[in-house]
Amino acid sequence: QVQLVESGGGLVQAGGSLNISCEASRAIVTFKRMLWYWQAPGKQRELVAGITSGAVTTYADSVKGRFTISRDNAKNTLYLQMNNLKPEDTAVYYCVFVTYSGSDYWGQGTQVTVSS
View 1 (cartoon, rainbow, N blue to C red):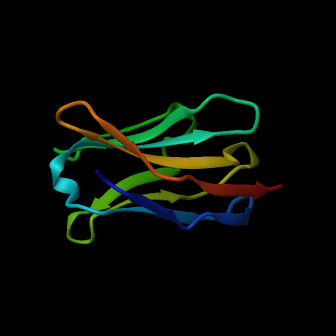
View 2: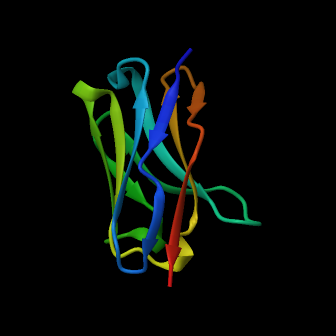
């Protein structure tokens, strides 16, 4: 079993930045992929960014050039650096860790609110 604890969300003005993080209770090198999803009010969860064990990154078109996913293996932590935030980025952000056997673990979510 894995516990994921997210932090770093909050309220920011449009154009501002936030760095959210997700700390795992075990070594993150044991995971195949690590992802960030968001869920805006009244909408389904959507994939925002992902990083593989080989450090290959992917991004939703809406955040390319503004968001950066990264990880710190020594701290067992996944990050999402968000720059030039827009009101439409307002959502609850979830980290998801996927194992090589196909199991996935979700964080509790952290609220990001961008005011115009």
